[in-house]
Every structure is written in C-alpha cells, then in structure tokens.
Amino acid sequence: MTDIVNDIRCHLYSMMSNEHIEYYGVVPLSGCRIIKNHLIERLDYTPTYVIMFLIPYYPGESQERIVSLYAVPRDYHIYIRELCGRLTDRLKGKFPEYGFDGYGDHSPIYEAHAAAIAGLGLLGDNGMLINEKYGSFVFLCGILTDIPFGDMSYMHEVKGCEHCGACRAACPTGTLTGGGTCLSQITQTKGELTEENKALMRRYNTAWGCDICQLVCPHNADPIKSPIPYFQTDLVYSPDVGCRIDDRAYNWKGQAVIDRNIRIIKG
Image (cartoon, rainbow, N blue to C red; front, side, top):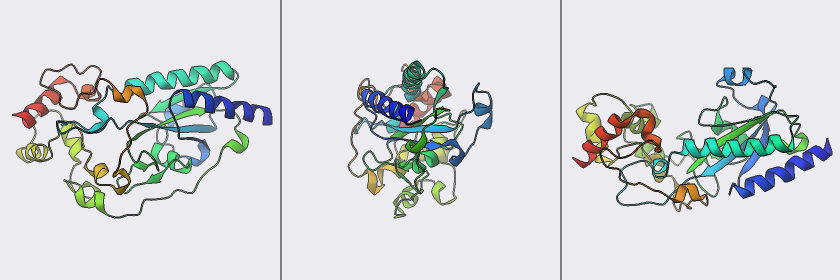
C-alpha cells in the first residue's frame, strides 16, 4: 500500500505541474454530496475517491467586455474535456488495474463542496469556491477513481467566507437574497425577453453571463491571470452579431440567443 501511495503522489505532482495546476487534493467519495448517481452507477468499477483540482481562468479585464469573464477565452468545456482526457490517460497508463474518469461542470458530485473538503478554498455566499490565490475565478474538476489513496486522502472542515455582504448587496436581481432570476440566467433565456430584462442587460452591459458578485468580492480585489495558455489566447471581449461561436461558451444556447443579446447591448 505504501509503495502505490508514494507512486500516485509523485505521479500526481508531476502531471499536475505539467498542466500548470497548483491546487489539488484527494477526498473519499463517501464524504462528497452525490447529485448525479446515475453517472457513478454506469462506471465499470466502484469509485472510492475523488481527485479534486482547480483550473484558474481569469483572462484579464477590458473596458470593451460584454460577456462574462469565463466566456472571454475559448469554450472552457473544450479545455476541460481535453485536460481530463490527458490526465486520465496518464493515470491509466501508470496504474492500468484501476479506473479513472474525469468530470468538470457535469460532475456526479457537488463540486464546490468537494473542493472545500479537499482544502482548496472557502465557500462564498454566492455559492462559489474562493481560492486563496485565484479567488473565485476557477473552474472545478474532479477525477473519480478506485485507486487506494491511503493517507493521501484527507477531509478538511468546510469553511465559509467572512459574509461581508458585498455580493448580496451588489446582485442586480436580488437572487442571492431570495429574489428574482439571476442576470446570467436571463442572458441565457431563449425567445423574447421582457423590456425589464433587456434594460437590466443594458444597465450592466452584459450580453452573456454576470460577474458582479465575483467582482465585488474582497477576495477578487487583485485577480491573478491564469497561468494556463489556453485562457490567455484567442480572447474575445466584445463579440459581434454573426460571430463564430462554435468554440465559445455561449455556443450551447445557439447563435440566435447571443446575436439577440448583442443587439440589445450594442443597439
């Protein structure tokens, strides 16, 4: 057992470093909150641990920006899919007798809670994980496995933020205090929008998503750009009507939605 734990510890450090991933931790699956059990049931092995890790994505700010910061680089789903493929292939190559499956944004577990018990950050009042270095500008990913981690696995106490109230006060629709629909969700709504919703989008200058609760958070006061090249190249802060969207995060709602929103913002 000691030998395999040492092997996996060294292997994890090496492959995470190669991918510019600084924050990762291992927790037992039994300590996580399962939200999509069918994804676990269809695996051909019984996972017992989760390797949680953070992907910092902050691309830098621009006065021209009309989309959420996570949507400025190319679609993060593409990166996560390719990254998880690389990581699980390396793990399977080194430890072929065990199973490994990676997830990001479609995980069978509540990722923010799992990352918190892995010691990767605090839980903010806006439901996001807040990392000590990258704030909340991080994507959360996990790899399910049945490899025996032994003492590498450790569950931290879940810690919350300081509850300063900044995010709640700044939320434009009152979503964080039990109010209306999140502005981000409004921008993703298909069909005709109400005049009130259009006015909200114009007021906050967003054609996709909303970063307000993150930008007012004290932990994001001095954001650090992502060290991952994917999130520093091919940046589009202000897309135009008819722009190519097949490699953008807003692609999943279709061309009509983002074009409609751009017309609302740009006139």
